Length: 489
Image 1 (cartoon, one colour):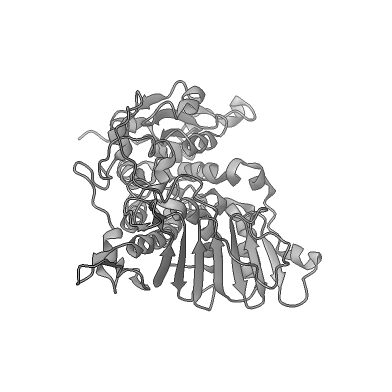
Image 2 (image 1 turned 90 degrees about the horizontal axis):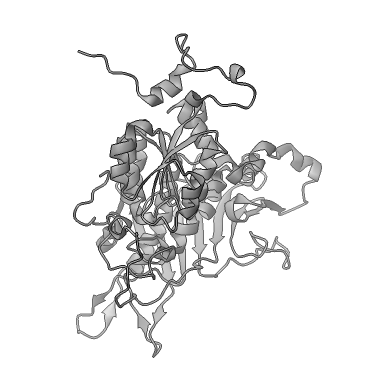
């Protein structure tokens, strides 16, 4: 039997360490700053426009790696990536790309609409490719759980695209909390000004001409088929459950991350919400199951953890509804971001810790005497090189881990591998489960009007992925794919 030749990935990982690796040109021979071709990772992008453009560009790292293939449903949107990587093979169907280019691809950035994250990432992992997946990791909770397990099973180096997880500010907060500066936390407040796209509006109607070159069937993916409308593509898909995950899905993985990381949180145990209504012209509240609401307020509860010996109640709000000033924060001081549009507040027994989007601008407020700058300096996070890199090196650290392999020290230090970002995403999507359950309606027995049985506290069994006190809510744990699509194909 003919001996199977090693894969390109095995060659990348082991070649430099092998005594027989004379095929690799040593760096010192090439000169300082020159990277041998055999040391470069071969990257592909699925979703090369919008955020996908910066994801693949940052992973490419000014030529430190190769970009061998691009896949996008709309080359008009992805024009910048096409210009940057003119030699990359182009595809509109990711399955075709994996079939034709798979042997030459080591790792893939996936920056598509939320509805296709899981099916694409699973297919890539099953093909043995390392994956970087934009936030939220998936469209529903079941997908996030399956992706987390698959990364372990197939020994894939994974990273979710919540770049704030790698920011110096996020790790500064971890340091402060681990040093006991704010004590035990039992309450967290998080808010965002999203949506900043059309949301909470009636379902679009009418026939629209398909833009030339748009692969609409691939855009829809496993979602239920709907006709093309500019109300969905580009970008406006975020406000429709068929494709997006609303304000929570867009910003939750950024803003919930600091509290999740600092406190070592896991699965929540219960969730409750209220959501803004959509009104008709005569000001009648309208039920629109296809669309995300214009605003929402969600409460999640978590058990105590090894890091934080207290149950935690997390309050989320979107649609421009922000948290109020705690007494310790001066009235004229902004909350979170400089304009208070987004932010995080951790309420501790000894003080308060806050930050803005991506963990930026962390601050401390103490119940008693303020700590001196000299004392605070003992707990300062000072990795200045990270601060200089695009998005705090979130993509480049993933690339480095891909080269060193699954289980390497670099892999273990990734800030948002699926082992971490999977449970984080499940928490974010738990909020959406509550929002969608909130609008489940059933006719009253007398035939007059409707009841909304999901408008109550929902109890969650995390290990089993089930709401235990409202069966209808479980339809939102795992969605039905349309014919021809399955997880990993």
